[in-house]
Length: 286
Image (tube, rainbow, N blue to C red):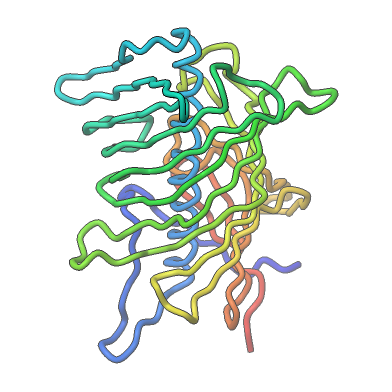
């Protein structure tokens, strides 16, 4: 496999964006596609980690109906537990709340399988309500199912699925979708920080395939796969495997490698680091 060139993508501005090149039709660069996909991955990871952490918190306070709240001036995150005959639920409300490197607004609802946490094959269902990250509307539903992996019981494992998900442009009116997404085979393993309910020491190892549409363009259907079983040789002979690791303070991911496939485009392989992604162009379409 040849690596044709390397481009460092800056993520100092975290809003997802793309470029319209002309008035008669839209065209997109590889940088646009890689950037949008990599940021979507961390946005939907943020949805996962916030829901998982809320589940942990309500368990740690023994399912009290008294709201749990974190505040920083007028910014806050409030977690409320509620039990009825019909269901057990958790509501997480955000007001200009910084979670790691992301500004959260709106709320999410988490339907729990019972008053317990980290029980084999038990799942929580998540729905976003007027939810936003860095001013961008994010919609979708997700399921977090706890698994026990024989021989690796010391770490937390989840199956993760995502449906009807989309991220919208922050400044366009009417609102424009930048990306739609679905995940059916996500796997999470907490490889650090599982001994506390705090998020800031968590490190999540993640593999998945995400599929959807970019920029509401019917010609831009994509498949984004984490290259978890492959190894690539980079500059100076360094080698990297593809499993993505998310940590709390990273803007994208701590490390890992993904491949985006779109019909008619060259292969797009990119490597994560905390400050951005490095794009590796694999082959050209003749």
